[in-house]
Image 1 (tube, helix red, strand yellow):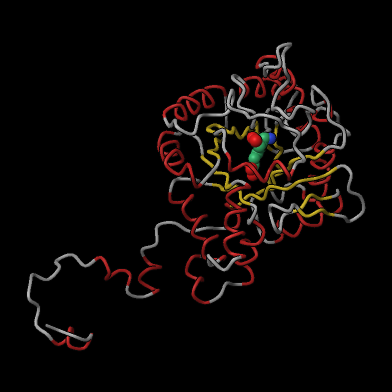
Image 2 (image 1 turned 180 degrees about the vertical axis):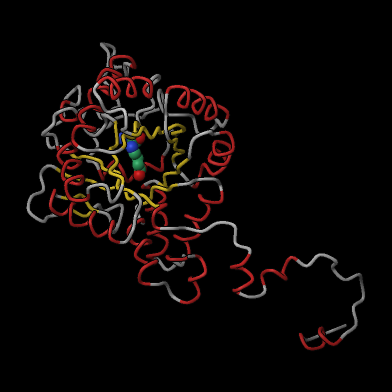
Length: 351
Ligand code: PBG
């Protein structure tokens, strides 16, 4: 019996040798590179950002549960977004944090509301160099924190909410958004928004539907990011994490209603859904690596439990492998910077 590695090399084989050797193509970096199926580009990545009404000058306010991510003033937003765009990110998805909230989310449709002001500022600053995207949802603007308006019994009123979404879409397009991203999971929202945009002359505004969006604990840190006042949960409108099939039904409906792009969200816990949606979808598919996924990577890396850069790249490549053309990630600007400035030797082949 061989006792050491060199004994093992020198001893004659005692059984059949492998006929297939899959390790062959893994044996050098050049071979691995030659056969690599998926890659990342900065233009694949979209950076979600937060603009807060109470911040002025160049101020920003760190979000504790998302180390490295902050709420921005208009100036800080413009500066940070410009830096990301110079690194080549494909888009900026903007969320607003208003000072005043009310039952119908008035700030969402006010041209002077913080989100619309932020969109106007981004568009003025960036022109068409990147895709300026608007989160189209009422939860940041309502005092009860739900994604829609409530009826007399306190339930989210689907059809009354559609009226608010129509107005919000038009306000966002008028502020300069190239794309609106309805994330409220109301029935008929894509058709309502498409119609509102078309009848007001915004037929070129893109609708990026949050198609399969789950009632997820992974949105936790986002609540801090937008100072959410939500009590309770979103299970009457967001999907049940136990279900896969209804994602395909949502896809069919959103495409029929006019979605240009569809999204699966969260990302990593729903890679199976992403794969199925991407196989079935006639339109491009995106994934959203949400706040909780970001927080997990950062927390583990801060403890030295994960190699931060490798984990980030691997998680983003997983979305590409599962079929995403575009990925929303809070790491977008940093990762795009790696393309320009280079990564440590061992990681270069990921790019
Ligand atoms: C709704 C919206 C949410 C997120 C994006 N859009 C919150 C929610 O649905 O509860 C979460 C994003 C994240 O967690 O990173 N406006």
